[in-house]
Length: 533
Image (tube, rainbow, N blue to C red; front, side):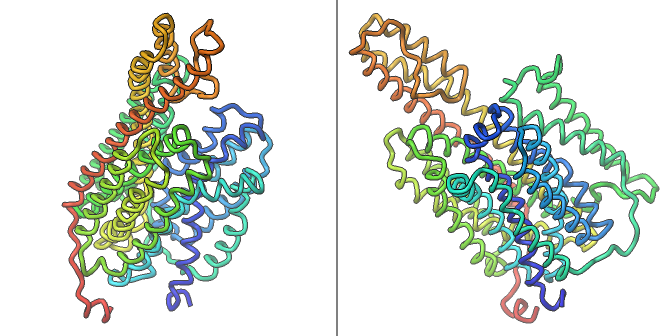
């Protein structure tokens, strides 16, 4: 049954992957509700999402290798049980600390599952028939990531924040039953001995780098733990990763039966390396573009969290539809052509959004740009994933999937941090500049203090509460209302300029992704060969 009906297993894999990707974005819109419900501070609630991404990213290389060692079905089922149980724990949590701990466990379960989903696709379907299943897998990734805030907003608004986690229970249980029955229990042909030292070096390196980059803004890129600064953590992580790279090179000349964490033969195929660079660029751009865009929609255009999520829904739908279409035709058009076209369309859509964004822009006017970006995303996922796995032997699929997913996660973390930092710097310059222009509308005696207060507020936060703006002291009552409106206008103008500027970085990284994509070499398949296969 399992091999004669691979699509039965495929839907279970998609359900698992959907939950993993959904939980990476669903928490964002629930932050205000969790602040009140758990009596938590903002840093604690931010860590609810950060710890999940951290726990989901760091072990991916190891869990991919575990699938090679013990079989992908067993590792996936263990991860699914952990993930589903941690979802229940998260929904029942009564304190911020308990919820953070539950989310960390949930992230570990997700890390165990993620590499196995792609590994199974390459085992269930021969290369000439992987186009559609890989496009479905890619569509699930894109749709789940974008619809996470929409689903979260609906659940928080109508049921309660706990249900952003409890919704995983029925999906998880159903997936567990289907996976246990339908997935083949593939086992390695020979036993493997893991490189424990390499795994430790890699895990410590990724932990320190990802933690430092992810939380640099929170610590203002200064001291994080006693005298240890964020920069110290990142440098320490890079040192561990350098030692890990040296360890990998050592295996090339060493005579040992220990298997390296990342097989050296994996990057012997230049296409695999190029596909990973494209995946990292895509993760950087898609994560980075949404940060300034969502803040602009909510703080400048005044949309609610649910409203801003609904505005992005056409992008999710288009991405899913085009992923399915591209999955059916990419073998005839060519993977490299579609990947480059998709990256350029995503860059064009992002550029259109940046060009159109103004303080008085009608939200619906942004939909064409989002649609173009969605088409771009839909054109990339299937051929990129297929290219990464097309030439790899079965015994390398698990580790390859771990590397491939790590590229996306690390790219996303870097994108969020880099664009966030650029946005902060932009606000610190653009808002005071707008304040100096708007100050000309005030009586001369208020201008200097007005600019000073606005500048101080802009330098201490990436956004300030426009319902309680920093007004000059001793204002005449009739002037106060006018100044309040001016302050809001200053912030809207300055933040819009900063958001537009910060979107340039994802566009630049996408263009670098285009350069990386030129190294992808996957031969096209003729219609006759596809039918015969």
